[in-house]
Image 1 (cartoon, rainbow, N blue to C red):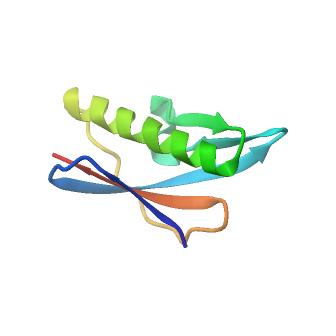
Image 2 (cartoon, helix red, strand yellow):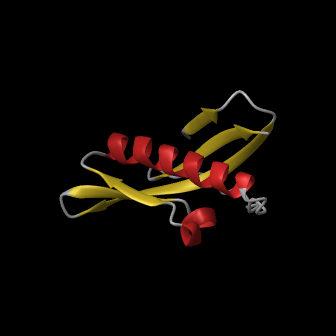
Length: 91
């Protein structure tokens, strides 16, 4: 199990599942709970895709909070080798 933490030194913590999959010569990453908000990206390596999706999730949640949009609550599933959990802390 791999847990990734995004800490913005704020008060509320959210956990998001992200999926990282091989896609031809690169890796595709997305957050199912935030996918309709555009939370998807890619990288040339699995690590780069994971780093990029962390940034995308952070920006997406920050924007949703600024716009007073509800943050989706998800049921946690057991991570697999290509699924990760991101923990994000916000106000």
